[in-house]
Amino acid sequence: MRAGIDITGLHWTYRTGVQNIYYGLIEGLLDLNVEDVDCFLIDRSGDGSHRLPLALSGHVQMRAISALGFLPTGNSRLTLWNRAVKSARRRMVNRQSVRDSLLGDLDVFHPWTWDAIRAPHAWHVITLTDVIPILFADLFQKEFVRTTQAGMEFARRHADRIIAISQFTKDELVRVAGLERDRISVIYLGVRAIFKPLGAATINAVRQRYNLHERPYVVSVGFLDPRKNVKGLVHAFEKLVADSAFRDLQLVLIGPPSFSSDQVLVEIQSAQVRDRIHVTGFVPDDDIVALVNGADAFAYCSLYEGFGLPVLEAMACGTPVVTSSTTALGEIGGDAAVLVAPDNVDTIVEGMARVLTDADLRANLRARGFERAKQFTWRNCAQEHLQVYREYGRGSE
Image (cartoon, rainbow, N blue to C red; front, side):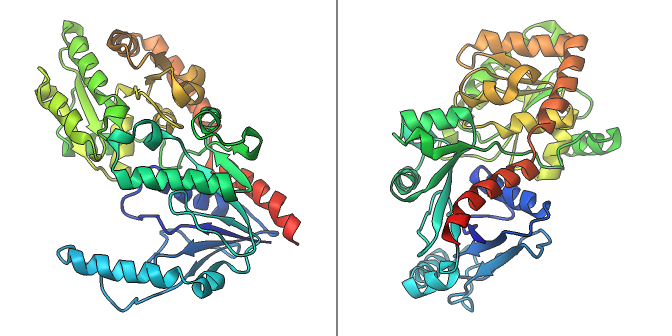
């Protein structure tokens, strides 16, 4: 059986959200010994430049097409040129003859979530991560909202199976997008192996690079976005450090800006304890792991999440977690985190204070967090995807 997974939207040096999901799925597939399914990673970008930082194996291979690959697009100052070349590549790759060469022999096709196309003769399986751009449309560029709506419509009209990444997301796809419940399967995501406890020397070296030194800190990882409730976390931090017991505490916010970051940055800049808030911007994965390891607590009090992978990554590092009780975060955090109401600053303050002052609670959360994180692996995720592929692929044999 031949299964194709569209990886056209992956970005190897800067992965977030959907990119991490597809990348993790590939890692999981490579960790399996599969004899009955040949997986082809489909690259429709047209420039032939994708290079997976993974060692592909016999059952997982790349399949790409190069269109105008001799024309460079690497100079960021040549914006109009880059746009024109990429547009021409898309037009060439989208020709039916080219699609047939890439997709024509597939039994099952797993399209890219936000740029879904059909394969000529295959069953279609699509992953839908959440309905966030629909519910919070004002926080996104209009084009991305339209792309999200197009992905939902593709799922409604063409998908034989829809994969949701949490039970909460499945319920929301039914409630908000009107998709049929019996067409949706829930497959949880996994935690990458790099998220693990590190030695003190490694942690301290990274702390020094980010000017955190020996003072304690609470860390949060995610886009600087209003939906992530950074404003609520900053206000909670201000109230927390008003207590002399936390006079040395710092807040570290890790993550790149988003389309709506200006709203968040205003709140941070106007905070009375601005000098104790560290905004790092984008941070390489290895540094994120070290910074999460070094934190006294991990706070992820988002207003809405379709899954909440950073919560599990912090648990895998042994860092106690304070997270929201709402949306998918309560489902993912379970009894291994302190759950708070994200729209109530006082509950966030109370949750962080409990973790920071109660040694027994910290030890308990650390132990439970390790066990919780072990339940979510990319290997398991890949196995469940293969089960879905087989279910439909056998029907085409």
